[in-house]
Image (cartoon, one colour):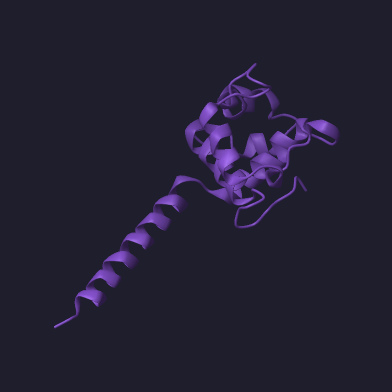
Length: 129
């Protein structure tokens, strides 16, 4: 008969595995990285407008995506992943063209996953390069 400790350990490990699997299923950070680097940084090049993922903490990125405000509240962040936006730039932007059929909510999750992973306190702090 198994001890209570080994049963609890098994349950705990199972729950942790499910939790990490759920996180990974929420967003594809690799696709988010490509979109961020080739679409977002196209406008945020150099100077004070450059916003690399490692410029903020994971908590700050989560709050940013939750607030859904871009350009100091002038526009919705969702606009920049909308199919209409991607259509408008696809002739000049290969990433926008490549991901034209990705659902908007999924692409937003992908970008968020990359930003959080690349945050200064994330798993792999990232620059815009």
